[in-house]
Image 1 (spheres, rainbow, N blue to C red):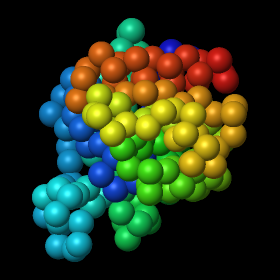
Image 2 (image 1 turned 90 degrees about the vertical axis):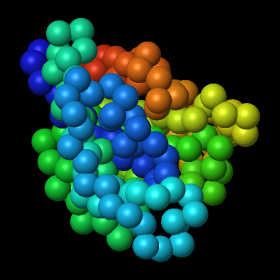
Image 3 (image 1 turned 45 degrees about the vertical axis):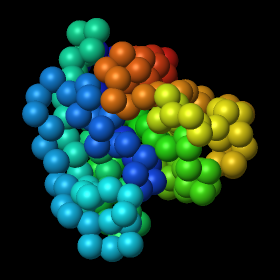
Image 4 (image 1 turned 180 degrees about the vertical axis):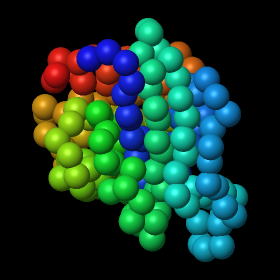
Length: 174
């Protein structure tokens, strides 16, 4: 496939979706972050309520990146953002095992919207409490056929590697 790709970046709350998009985007990211008013306020100050949008040209291909809200109360945006996607990434915080089952659920949800290539991406692998990819796969209840990659969403080279892997899967599926 040549030209443009629509990539959705989803994942549980606080997995690093906004950082992932901001790190790699060639343009200023359009974001809909708002102050948290709920119990999650102690975790971070802002949360995405509609989407993040960024764009990057990678190896001559234009990737349109759409980050979803991570909180279930904004899940009505998921199907809207998934329309006409070429692939998706489920990003998780590799230090937060309580969020791993949600990753498996998100894979099922987004696969039901559209059958496209996807990756499970374990973010924050630079932190001391990161868990092994095999444990993440097991605790997320996903098949051995699903690719699980490590990532540091604040490092451009790491994000680039994940996106190149997904684009290769998309190109093979065409």
